[in-house]
Image (tube, rainbow, N blue to C red):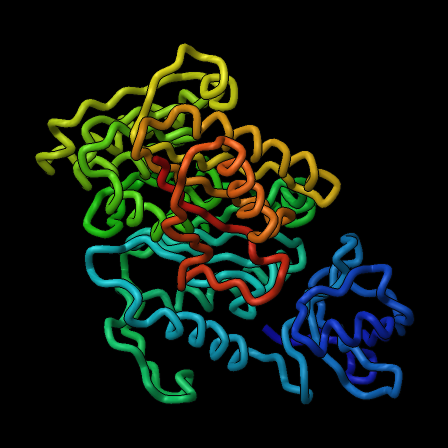
Length: 431
């Protein structure tokens, strides 16, 4: 993927505010439209823009989007580099090798590229066995999509290497086998760019880029459990891969407990809880599609005796209303994993209040010795704000409690700047 075809002296050049210079030097990958002070010409979607500081020194280079408030997504900061095919190949290779040793053959679903935090701003690449899902969050990638697909296809191989590459420069030595002949690739698009993708590039959400039209539902392994991912119509890229470590924690806490999985979606927390020895599990979700997926996920794991014998109940209802208003029923483990409650900064305060209310209702559902697992995926609510809100509600309940642990992002979902830090979970045990 090469820079603009314009002569070198016509490359798009920007100067930004002092505050933006400082942010870029500190490693922040975003430049907003209001931070651009000077621009040598009209920029095109997806072309490379070189950013210079107030002393006319090269500062960084990034992908330009003339129609987005987030005007430049930074690719590189420091000395000038040639952004060409070999550079892109090395960057993808680094992301893959960074995950070497994280998973074995019992886990075939994981994140391969995590956007800005892996040097691919606005681009996520998830793997479900031999199917890859490419999700784009910025239209700047659309003019480069053919090259991205070719690059991914050339590197997509079997499972992760099981040994960590120890060289300080892994891109020089990491070897990859030939592409898996059965590899498939599907495109997912952020809602805000679907219209542009369709009208300007004839691309659509859920389109198969490699492998032809396929069944949208496929299965993969996670820690030895089988799960279904709807890679064409499902949320995110088809499954919530980011909660893998929290599911393992729930499994370790579930023995002999009656479990309520609120906002259960397709029941992944519940399947783990049952394998961990839960006495019963109750999935609670407003989505019939999600509950049907939960039933299928349980069926996929019926060969495990504890899953085959456990009582699995599903309740189709608004989780907020049911937890607070339905006839009181106690549980020994309550999992609260709602969708994002703050999609923009202006919703942050209201989201914190909603988390407080939900936590209070969840605590009231807990029997003596019960455990609350409360999670948030709202990037605009910081981990400190969320944990503080949950702890405060726990104190206000006047019940004795012990904080077991807090968690954030898994190793395949690195977060290298504040806006990328969205996931957090806290576990409290009550007397």
